Length: 298
Image (cartoon, rainbow, N blue to C red; front, side, top):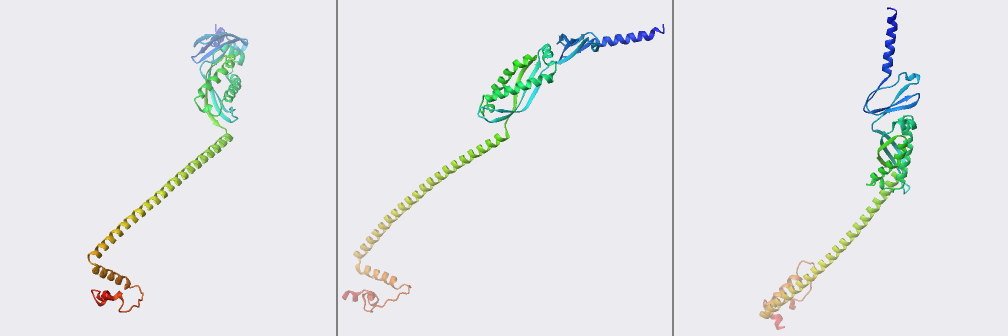
């Protein structure tokens, strides 16, 4: 009996190993391909506990776990040319899932890396084709959403042939290349300078018009003021002459006396002028006789 105990223990261990090796678990994010001698025996897509033939190392059933969730593949720094000949640098990504695990195993050996390498080429070509049909502004406008749908529809047949289902394609970044950016900056700078020159020219033209209008108004105002001044001066002189005439008519002698006094004030003010006149001159008649009788008798 004691000799049989080690043998029983070995058998128990073997049975436990075989039982453990015959079980596999699929969670909700995975699916499994059961292979027997390298060929696909069955595909399990529902989560749970499953059985298989043990001893995978001997060529019996082996299990390959395939992800059954939405996956993301990024494609960065793709240089694409638009219809005008300029270049963009584009970053894009696609989301996909393994829709047919059997076909995925047959075409890509169940390798996501191998499948993504093939999809990279297809996605790159689709981006170049879609961008090449548009002008420089399309990728920066509302047309961008339509471009992403076109890329998605173009790569779906290739993805289906690998057992993949493309859910969506998105363009994350669309930037000008360095040389195009420099050219664009130079063009925009030239446009801004030209616009500044146009604005400056319009401003100078408006300033000349305003200045000319102001100068014309100054001349008109001065002319009107001079005209009004001459009119007022003429009216004042006419009124003065009228007053003088009226004074002369009322008292001619007083008027003569007033005018002589005004002449004395004008002639004898401190101007440094020397006058040589005879004392008997009519100019001094009111100095000799307040009534100017001498001048009158003469």
